[in-house]
Image (tube, rainbow, N blue to C red; front, side, top):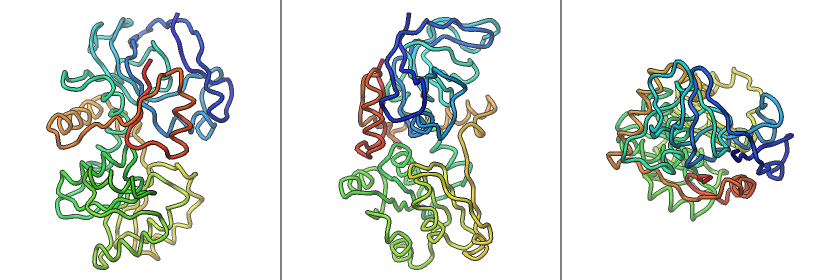
Length: 323
């Protein structure tokens, strides 16, 4: 037998239940992973509340983890029992043992331990595609990062700074402002009311070519007002709620702006892209330019407390659940 945190319906953190479950067997193309660490992400809240739908109940949520391959099913050649692996974008992570499609697993370098790997995969690969594909950040540019003290935000700040960009971070408290500065933010705006005016002041009126906004509804309009003509609005999350329907004519009125709502699944749909992006992520972490910061850990059985902390904005950086 194994253990898992399951939901039997949508709701608050209280629906996360620690239960006995059968240890699964890997089928064709699958691997059984004994999990050593599991990443906590805001998308987990979306699945718990029903903002994103699970296939059926009872359901195990969670999108990323790291551990050791215990067995593989027929047709699996790239991964072997004993391999240290990590993955992202595979629903069902809140478990001590789970099966994963083998083509979603990447081998871990020896320099990266399980907790850091579990904190890196979804958030780190998200930062990778946002900075290197969705918009290719170049030295000398200025970028705006909302939730700059969150898991993805801290990685964006560090990595953009490493690329030679000037980083403006937006945070909710002075304590988080200090953390953002320690992680590469050159300028930090506390609160959301004056963001466009502050961006205008910082940039001398030029505004920014790209905004990375994981907040959603509460910040969408202000984010548009921070963009230079032909700038790119990247809304990659919705912690304050989904962005309401948009009248696209506003993009013309504000300077022929571009708007995208990317997701990691699209960027890693091809195995070759997953391997390339992971290699880029692992290399920048191994170099020391980007630090994988696990700021909080919870026991997996205490996932409800972890969700409560995440939703109340009591966390910074990455949070990891330990089986």
